[in-house]
Image 1 (cartoon, rainbow, N blue to C red):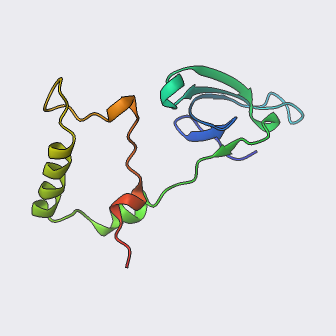
Image 2 (image 1 turned 90 degrees about the horizontal axis):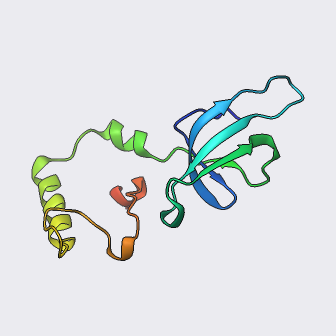
Length: 119
């Protein structure tokens, strides 16, 4: 079995889940029970329990390049401020101008590759 631990994000049954609990195998011939919480917008928070080794498409969502971004250090404060202000200007909602929301209840997940420049 892959080393699955609480707090990881996994893909099971074509959906992303947060691992909430991992119950180790009682014996080598038995399977690992994993409790999951759905991260998809239309089923947010719905729980699912699976036997990890029995799931056909189960996989741990690989580490992104966040570590490489963190190793580069922080952005120039002026550049980051400009970026942040751009987000605020483009994401004003009718309910609260200071609240960052996505239209149509879509979830927003900033990916590491969106913050990296390509040469």
